[in-house]
Image (cartoon, rainbow over all chains, first blue to last red; front, side):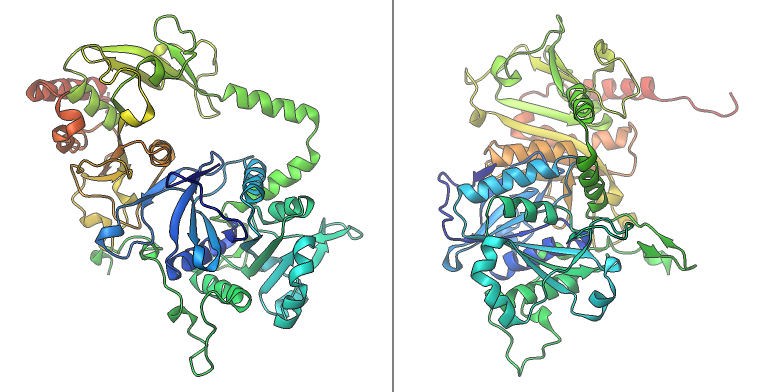
Length: 266
Length: 268
């Protein structure tokens, strides 16, 4: 359930909700971190749930002493009212059998708060790509029917690739075709639920392998930015191979691969 | 899936935990009413129950409503519990008011209905001389203190963990906890998870003042030096009034150590 930080519940009518799926490489979550950090979004509440493994830590977006001691939990909501953006960040993995209840609670909150649309940032196993997918861009999008009406033309003008259908049961030759997102966590479940509840939802994902997924996260936010123009698009005089300069990495991304090494090792 | 150096393809675990979800989805499709019933019964068996000490009947009302208090201290793990028992609970008379009974697949005991108090994993005590301060308890009047330990290799720092002065204390506090901590706060990007995180998250969300004292140590079993690392907390506002006799506490602690020492010698 959503619990506001302050006394009153903020009005999110007409806002765009950005959220991650906990998926391979944690790319969606890294991308949301970049968005919250770059836009300096303020925390407006918590999504208090027993569906995620509990975790706490000090402010992951701290910029100095004065804001480094605010406690953060595993699911928090941030907003930027001037751009009508609200972001939900999920920081831990799901507890077994709790993904379905979580999707239900989340979508019921989305409907209740009158958000205009939801954009899910996700990823899928790159080793599961078929031959065609191997040769094309690693980015894909998916729209629910109610969203398609509004943005299909925009997608065409951006020249984006829609997520292809593949055999539902890969081992069987004449299996039906459906959208599969291996490694995507709750992405497919959220998408299916939104279709049946007529929620305007778009899924943006990248095919990735696990490892240092920061470049994948940067790629995904640039992909999102082509559509939403969260930060100004890069100018041709700028070096397009360095997207990292335009997005601010949060201070919590330090030591992603562990502590320093003992000098005696060398 | 990942390829090893020798060319074999192995299934590598995904750190986002998504393999389980795909299994769950397939299980959900094949689930029969019998499976659902089995799962429901298992969930009931795993519920945490709070029981009254003497009668072992359930506590129908919330523990904090029945025993309103201004200070709620929770110690998790053997070193934190030893600290609390020796330094805080040795003064005054502490009455056992209840215990929590729980079972999951990792428990060695199979009998879930008649768990003896010795097997209870969580026991609640309250101080007889000062049972309540502000009468009926609203959440806002309670201050929560949590003590626990973690292995020093969990602590992320740009130096190597081998060079850290273990054991050392770090703190995390909720927004509403206004007193200063007795040690430095846990720096980014360090996090805490499991039970201490669950308690602190609850307190943060519902605006209860709470503080977690985390001892990073390289000895996870009961250890004198680790327990004594919690000592700076004795000067905190919440514990100062509860601590009476430190030399006596040290003696109690030493006795606890010797009774718990496992005499292991392969020659005897």
